[in-house]
Image (cartoon, rainbow, N blue to C red):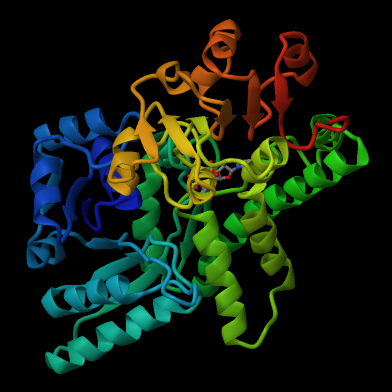
Length: 444
Ligand code: UDX
């Protein structure tokens, strides 16, 4: 099938690449000419395992192409994906301007029936806005004869496993009333719909809300566990025991109940805020979601609070080794990352940071490169040199079995603040560390 994807961010680029890889002819459109040029040369703007070979091979095979020419894009695909960004605007609601510009563009250039698919995470009611905007543009062209359908087909990929998530989706949600569109979308996804039928057809608004409900439910699990961790810490319990104890109940499950330093990234914070906002727009007070958001904001400060409780108010002139800057492992993304809240609080208190991350160093340089209080280090070991303590913010695999003797030698005092509960507190004590983690330091 011929498919066009507007937007070459996480969602658009991965979607385009996996569709091309199974044999569809995909054209990716973006307004950023540099990005399009680099993509043609096989330079991928994000770190995402498996994406680079997929893009290169399918581009070389002629199944995947890149252009800045929107008219060409509209002409190409029977199915037109809208996968552009929906950044939060000042009040936290999703800003639809890019989505609506693409809608206008499609209506401006289309000459035949088009299936327009919202792939970006967009508030309930967006498909209707896209439809109205397209109708207006078609009317202004005097082409009310042209038909189109707007489908909601939300994406559930996770950064770091985006390619695999798209290739093996848990569910394929198709929100539309049009049977023809359902048939076309089913055909498009046939290569990914094996073993059992993963397609769920529903009305557009339910599809739009499903995406938010999924992310908000996951964010709720995390904030809930962080709350239990804070309680455990104060009650003399161990949240890791509690986690396993409750996870064994299949109704709760072991997934996504890891306490830590709060969720970050491009989805959870934005989507929770956007749904709170959507609720507010219809005078509904989303009490649970507000609490989820508030707990998360506070949880991001937990490492700094522990540092301050340990060192007292004399943080000025101290140096901290920080391991992990990305909001989670296997990505270079630092959007809403807890590491940023920690580092900014340390700087505010007059401390210095020596940071290392396996993938996010360029991003850290871009965000904070001009700051004297930050030294970006080439290895996790060099980040330790002469530091007063180590703070672990992201649970990268390569941090799980460090050389503890070396850590002790390098730090001026053997103190580790671990935001991800990576080590056993008893063993750390035996090794001679003062070890702080989340929800387990009952006796400290
Ligand atoms: C998420 C959803 O998982 C995905 O389905 C959706 O499409 C986009 O948003 P992503 O933001 O890539 O994906 O990351 P994810 O792996 O879900 O982690 C989100 C955040 O939650 C991270 O900051 C992570 O550290 C945190 N987290 C996750 C916890 O603190 N505890 C957990 O148990 C799980």
